[in-house]
Image (tube, rainbow, N blue to C red; front, side, top):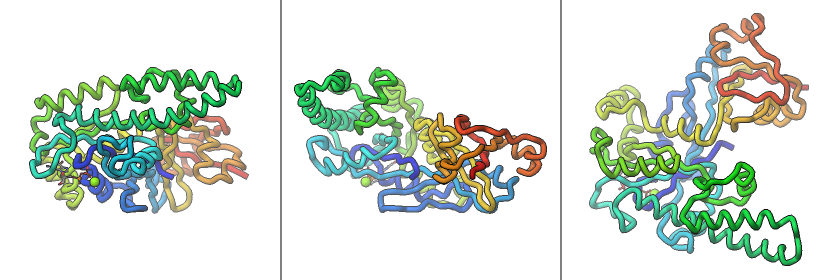
Length: 365
Ligand SMILES: Nc1nc2c(ncn2[C@@H]2O[C@H](COP(=O)(O)OP(=O)(O)O)[C@@H](O)[C@H]2O)c(=O)[nH]1
Ligand SMILES: [Mg+2]
């Protein structure tokens, strides 16, 4: 299953506009356009030039990029944590996501109603984050009741969990999201299973008016939003969703002209995917087998055996050895056979930590 990135934000922030732009955008990787699994879910291939080059020298005709799934989550309204609007249903969707793209409105359009009393982006983002924090507090409250019953029954093992729970609830009550809270690695691991909304990594995206693009550095509300997100140590990207949607409809040549006109280097999708990948702490390894070159996105710290299991569970079970070469060394060698002859393929055991950009041939029984 590809990693899932949920697009959240207030109603009319431009979430659906961005979603359709992202999922209909042809990325220049092979001929694999996005696939829609559900109306609000779109699988987007991760553009990767390294895979294309490795495929070329390995003689693979088919290129299968790694994927990222984007999910357009129905709008959040104030009070969602108390069940307002789509309330609980909406929160359940967010719970399944690996990462959140928090889209914040920063465009003028008098005919499109603003939700939230305050106009400025920071206040809008804070409304959403407060709802997420309240939802977490509500679910932690339920957990606390259960734990208190076990404490009364004299279960000593539960004490540590109870302290952590109190600590985490204190942070939330102070308006600190758990992703920003000073917790130890051990504590983070313990709460990972609690399915909390505010512990998910967040990428802030400011949906700016296309008229602001040339003067974006000068605008106060943009500057203060950037400062706010920097304080939280979170990445923040700027884009115009409606411009991206227009861009997505164009042919390649027209696209280049359009990008230049607005002084943009590339479609926002590319930087979104890059930022998403680094936020998720993912790396890509490649397999070139027969006709197919394929990229696999896995968490940093994945072992050779785990990587094999990603390709096929039997390969992990019957793992013998991984033959590893950095993609660029393969490209320089000209072919897999020549790389092997020159002894450029390293033999690595099951516990070897896979590195980003490696081409791997797995040997198994
Ligand atoms: N000017 C401008 N309008 C936008 C932009 N993004 C969305 N809109 C408009 O805002 C309205 C709400 O957008 P939508 O994507 O449905 O918002 P959602 O409720 O967050 O899904 C629509 O009328 C869009 O055309 C933008 O970047 N610039
Ligand atoms: Mg929508």
